[in-house]
Length: 145
Image (cartoon, rainbow, N blue to C red; front, side):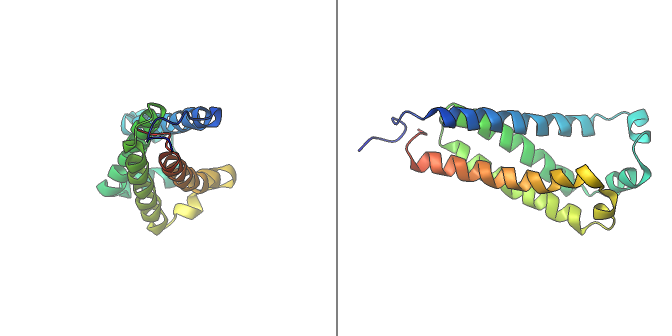
């Protein structure tokens, strides 16, 4: 029997870890883009998207921030093979469900989405669950210290 954190992870561990880092890095980038948006950039958005952003409560923005920041830090810690990554991926996943649960309660959110735009609200929770499950399995397999 090997001790915790002494089992050498397979190549797919590193591949998934890097994908998690890239995915969550894109989320952090999108969050920063939204909170630093200029008035001109905001004015260029469709009216229904502007209305949704104006009406959005603070806790929804906070859930977005927690989701992407916890996911990004969890990805870094996963690549460093730290067990705390599992807990941070769980926090990220719960924040994702809070964020999207809140968004779907807002009137007009589904009406605002068209074609390809509906993909992200579906993919984001899937990735959040997938990364949390992956980190949990890595902890159980002894890849994390």
